[in-house]
Amino acid sequence: MLLLRVGDADGGWRFRCSAWVDRVATRVRGHEALPVHCRSLGEWTGLLSGLGFDLRVIPMSEGMPFANVLLHAIKPRRPALAAASLQ
Image 1 (cartoon, one colour):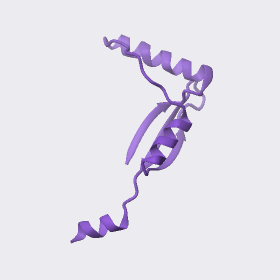
Image 2 (tube, rainbow, N blue to C red; image 1 turned 90 degrees about the vertical axis):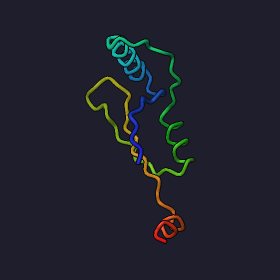
Image 3 (spheres, rainbow, N blue to C red; image 1 turned 90 degrees about the horizontal axis):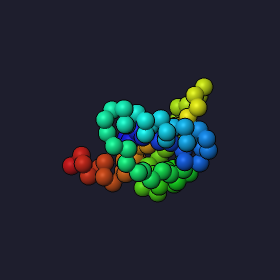
Image 4 (cartoon, one colour; image 1 turned 60 degrees about the vertical axis):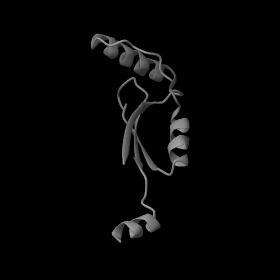
């Protein structure tokens, strides 16, 4: 199982607000805010699905000005591997 909190880069002003808050929080904690590569929700789901994960997308920003989602990704066990591990 993989849990990721990601910002949807296609989220317009909500994404820009999320990214700004993340940078400020990083600096307040005494760290340098390094450049990051951001993906859209579609890019994230395509990438993880392509790696064999079953995905559930859970919105996280209801009532807030952010574009964050929780990606709950599970990689199903392949029957051949499960049977081999029992031997």
